[in-house]
Length: 256
Image (cartoon, rainbow, N blue to C red; front, side, top):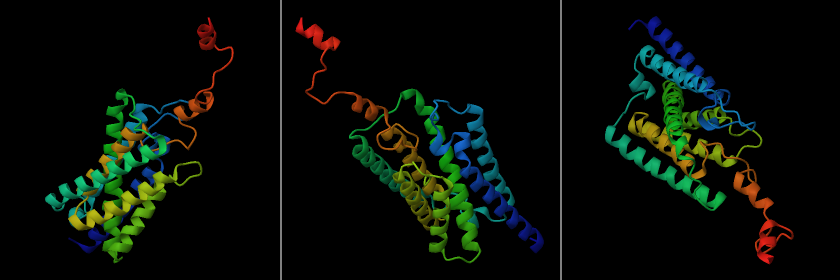
């Protein structure tokens, strides 16, 4: 391939990667990824807006595959070692489930299963978000950093940090657990990508972890600050256990 064409395609791939990072940074406006829930006013973003975010991410991913000369070899945009991808994804996903269960047990003292009607949308959001994240960060960004001559370990840390920042989970008032989780998924996903030669393992583990967080916490990834969950607010309104409210309907009927 002509050197000029090769350089041009590589520069276009860099541009597409940056666009995917910007799209991820704007997930809150679209109501996707960690923000796939109603806002504080109770308003839910329109379905078309969410589908547009998924569609744009998919379009940019296809563009990377079509433009870059060696997307699987250089950008990890493929399965890589299939057996390693399956095993790595299963281990990653199992660890993600354990972390989600542990967090819910610590924070809520129980598993907060959400309304069953929300499962299809949350599953789509978890899968599509994981795909876009892995293509953009563990795939294209990680691969481009390595091909530019950066040490793979340093490249892995860079893409993981950029990914964690792109999720905007470090903003004031947001649960730091989620920021640590995002950073951890970025590092582990990058390590698995380098190990297997593809993003399949990272994608599988990422998607399972996201859905596990949804099932265990009742949120798609953006848990409310401590003290603002529905049951926490309700518990503050109830009198202490063993106390009786004088003049309540329950106590009046019992006295009679």
